[in-house]
Amino acid sequence: MRKAALGAATLLTLGLASLATAADPKYDLLLKGGHVIDAKNGISAVRDVAIAGGKVAAVAAKIDPAEAFKVVDVSGLYVTPGLIDLHVHVFAGTGEKNSYAGDNSLYPDGYTLRVGVTTVADAGCAGWRNFEEFKTRVIDRSKTRVLAFLNIVGNGMRGGAYEQDLADMAAAPAGEMAKKYPGLIVGIKTAHYAGPEWTPVENAVQAGTIANIPVMVDFGADKPERPVADLVTKKLRPGDIYTHMYSGLRHELVDGHVNPGLVEGRKRGVIFDVGHGGGSFAWRVAVPSIKEGFVPDSISTDLHIGSMNAGMKDQLNVMSKFLALGLSLDDVIKQSTWNPAREIKQEGLGHLSVGAGADVAVLRLENGNFGFVDSFGGRLRAKQKLVCEMTLRDGKVVYDLNGLARPDWTTLPPDYKSTSDPRWAGGPGR
Ligand SMILES: [Zn+2]
Image (spheres, rainbow, N blue to C red):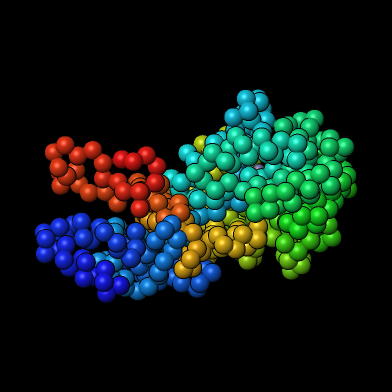
């Protein structure tokens, strides 16, 4: 250390000051003066965050800017772990019409990084028969970290007949495929089932048990033979996830109050997820539920072609809805970072501990007049809205709304070509 400092001093005397500071600073990037919200580490306070080698290197009240190659002033903004969206549909590119293993899905990067999301979990677009195609087409090619709930249906979410085929809901091959990709397949999904049988849920739980991963349930059609209370009090295991919790489509409310079965399920350890989507979030369900304390464990979008331009829009829009419902910013961040990470047993994600991968969101809480629309066209007016200023993936800036990391062009040489450096800038070398 002492030797390096001496070297820098020598260069300085040679009039190479800028080269000297660039030579071997301790940190690649320093986010200075932001309000850090990190639920795992119990931090909600102004902190500097230093990054080196793609990892969080230090979080402290004051870090010397001279120790960093690049300093970005984020004062007045919130610095959080990269957001985790636990329920999306991103198996795009197969060309299959009317299919979530096709045209109903979206390539993730255009819908994630620009709203601070660095990790998504695909909610069952692929089953064991087509998971490896999904991996090759999307997972391996995306800048967003894409994890997956494997559909209990071998053919995945290809629509109509496929998703009703009980014979294709085999636990063993699904469980085995999940075991082949630990940390990538993080759960089993059952969805859209219209029949009266419990078979999809039972087989999903069996597959989840084989691979020691949770099950996420979209409970499909509302059937008296399989009430939602029985699902969460008898069929699911602690740690399994009920998504679409505010849809109102399956008796989530009874006589205007939260279904006592759901409350009982939560006591047993069943997890409740938003999964907003195109048809699964109603103010008339969410408002009374939250008044009774039935808040989400995780906030997720259910991103797909039917929700992207409707009331859902994106992760920050859904999070802003929960601010409007009276949840604290700290809670809403926790429900979009550390909580979902734990739900899928990915405890390396969702926090800013020293040594963790530096996936980071820099957010602004805007004040103004905003409207938030539910899945049934009801609007709720509110005064605050979250906006993403900057997103880091593995320590690199991959989204920068207002150019916080960039110099004013008038300060650059007349023939400037690039202001980037691979130590902090992601994407093309601009
Ligand atoms: Zn979904």
